[in-house]
Image (cartoon, rainbow, N blue to C red; front, side, top):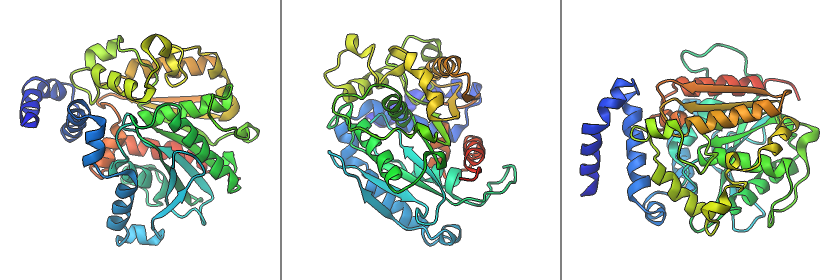
Length: 367
């Protein structure tokens, strides 16, 4: 009974603001649906009613497999368990036996929501498909690409640094297959962007307690790192929170709730220097990112609450890495995680085309 009242309230009070800002209506409605779920349902409730990451992956494969474009690339479900506790796995999109370039992908969802079908459409259209989307610049894609999607443990059942250990295990698995870092781009959206930064921190900084060691891939840097609407701070006092808190997918209470779920017993005072919230602690380690990659791609929506944190983080990275190409895209009409919202509607929109162009440029070089 609360859902109709929630949507009626937002239609009356917030929709006019969204329309005035020219936020695409379908994306805003989907964003509002996500906001309702994140704000009104507990993580346990969400995980009880939403298909798991593996179930979503298997269902998406079954739906797409008969379609012509997917048959050409021999789409099939391939799940690989990782040697880590608690259990995690790699879900392959594309054929890893034929691919010469790879994406290690961490999905978002505040660490409490499983993989969404929109993530899979994004990964397919942004990285795997060899068919150029309408409106994209035509160019060769000489390499076949496969995406390794990490199925990680969700909070509140799994606390930090569980997901970081699983991300390290995923990278270790790829390197163990003989895949060179220079043939891999790594990234994710929202909490997945946060997990990407945690992985960079692990590779660039001192090892975290309870995290297994990993061979340093800096001898051959990653082809690129991408952060889509990344969660980089636990503070909620920026201008973008004030201006966009009503219209965005996220709000201060939602972010605060996710912070509590994933950090567990780490209190607000302690979390100021917590590696899981990189903008809130010592930023000196960011200067090591140029040893790990030559290209960082950061995206955010001008209409999202994370905007100011993301821009501050990107600038902090840029200042400390003169040898790093830092590309920042701000979608003027976009809310949080616009590329996921495009994927949720199976649309290859502007955010997906921008990602595809960047990824293609990073993966086109010969090994």
